Length: 375
Image (tube, rainbow, N blue to C red):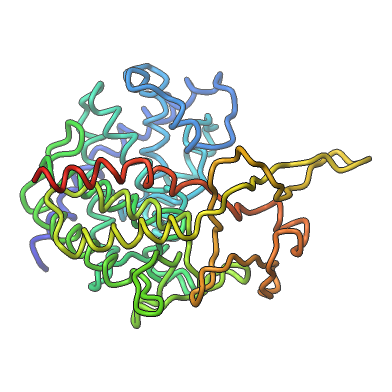
């Protein structure tokens, strides 16, 4: 057994030895959150909070939920509304499945979001259980990384497209942003990172960046953007769900480039990557159009349409053809269509086909270039 595995076991048993007392306290604390209004999106709930809120009793109580949802392997399942109250029975059920790693993931912000939350709470309530849970989450992310630097959607691995290297929904960017902070500061927020874990975090970050550079798509000899997922062996663009075909992604590429731009003293390869991606964003931006929702006559629902708008900000297609950057759209049958209006109502309105995420890259790029000259 290597030192890293031993460290994981020590941390696990440290937490487990306190589990009986914490189980009782968890039930008590979750009762205190029952007056909270049900909120449907944990990520939006988190995004709405200012730094000082993490020192509130509400945040302190929610932290108990976050601890309950964490599995012993260190990760969390996705799409869980951590901020909502739990019944006594729900608490007991969560305690029973602690040792089941099924469903642990970094998809849809899972694990990363919980780690950031716990680090913020720890700043105000420096209790060891929050620090230990953060470190378990960090070690989970390190274990989940492929040797080539990428991350799958689920770990332990889940059969299907889930094993692909995943940029979709900013999965890898979210992980690497956490590792970047750790690499630069040797801590995350006020959580000091043990030397061995710090060293592994730096190695993981550097491998992740190399994976990003290797997977930037070369189109007719020119570097462009990134696909939402790649084959974990060949690093070739890969399909996911039936309507998520191999393609260049305006949305996912943006967060990747912002990560690269945040790296101090970037290598020549990183500089070339950012410059090429910036040029690609300029080339593929759609001007004079915007997506709006219009009411459907005699029905209590709306429909998304792309309309002309002279004053609209630039937007980018979610999926673009690998060969020529042309936007395309798909229903669940996997058949490509050339316009949003050509796919069915369910997918047209149930998926984000256009976005403005790259605008942040265009906004920050001039200063980034200027800083390169200064250095």
